[in-house]
Image 1: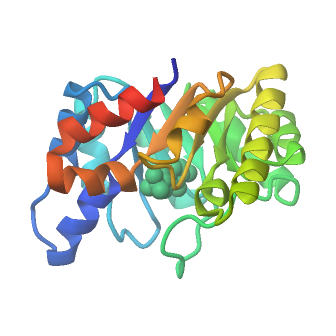
Image 2 (image 1 turned 90 degrees about the vertical axis):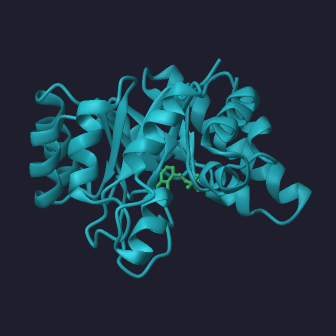
Length: 237
Ligand code: PXP
């Protein structure tokens, strides 16, 4: 049964629309955990468009499951990560103009700086996943630079417009997940997964954890975060 890490970024998106105090991602995270979330994920972006430093610091104290900090491989984020010590970080490529993370890391191109970065974080006792596209090379290079694991980008699968396209993307995810497990990496997946498309990915026993945000927080508006998390847990498990 795969674990579900609930990404609460978009609770903060609503709060930041008014630069107000609510809704609070910390409260949302607590409720997600009460409903059975196996972990909480937040992305502290360079431009602080949703999650704020204060959120991450408080979450470190309140999250009882596992805190996953998504971040770019910058010196600023390294400092914050070493201070907060989340259970895990997921390194993502970050562009200011994007609405959400668009693609996986180019691990091969950034081997040397990434290797150093990963080593420093792992020496602090923090697990490191790299967010990668579902391609074998990215899995192999992640292993080579010493990451704990990978998070396989499921966005192209979620965005596929035809049955054939979905099948092709699922195969890419599956092949990457099989390879990742075979070489001993922790194998996670996420991005764009929702209540209609998660089942096919969740059927892959190689995937140990899913990071899902937007669809859960969207459904929370109608049914509350507890119910939204429970429904997703049933689909993932
Ligand atoms: N995984 C990573 C690395 C992400 O950047 C995001 C989006 O912040 C997610 C998972 C969650 O994606 P979604 O919000 O589409 O479920």
